Length: 292
Image 1 (cartoon, rainbow, N blue to C red):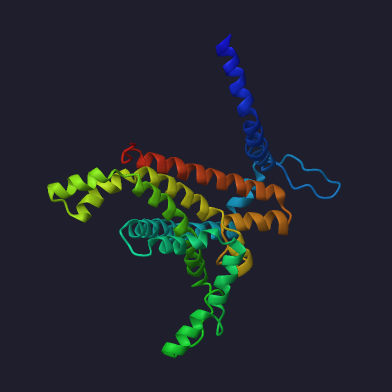
Image 2 (cartoon, rainbow, N blue to C red):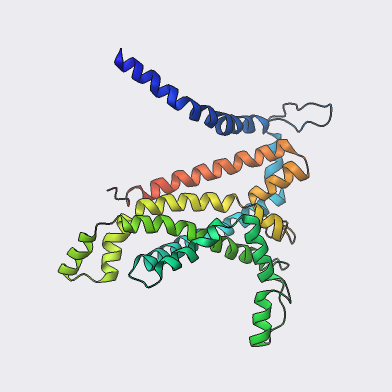
């Protein structure tokens, strides 16, 4: 009787969270998958089942392949650099550094800024002729103005820099917490054995940080696919879709061109890509992770 009562109380405590999880996560995901097999409703004309036609259209859509390629290069540029920079910053502010509290706050500050504010700050940096970058280039080196956001060859790299600046401090917090959880006796034992700092980092610290690296890398992959605000404010996907990413293309398809069925198809593909990448990361890091 006591066991049954505890079981009922447990489900009663879980039910509010399960209700919200189903209402705002599972149901929308299932509804999106179903909608991807239907046409877009127009006025009084309801959506009708069209099977895999949306997926066939996607495979023949040159813009989809363009934004998918952009997303690949965006992820390749942001994920390793932001994680590596976050680890370096965490190691630095975890050391016996004067003013390390101020340094931690400075590194973490971009994380708490609203996305629109970050976009406007970097718009000031990138503005041709008047921006901070061109003021430095022209004032110190006499170089002509450059339009980083208006050039298809440089716009994606410029957006990568903004994303790294915004995310590295967020990932640093997790690495800093993981570093502070490493027992000091390990460092003392390494000193007794005569191990150098680099050897201790490579053989002791890095394996202990692998669970954090897995968590951070999964979040970095998700962040690389969910960028919309910066693109909306800074480039609107241009020039010629050179800075458009997959989620921004989904936003445009659904709310600008009002093709909700095709947008659902693109969303399903993005969810599949993220799931495959996340599962692949778990298998990749599983043998290298040491759980304390």
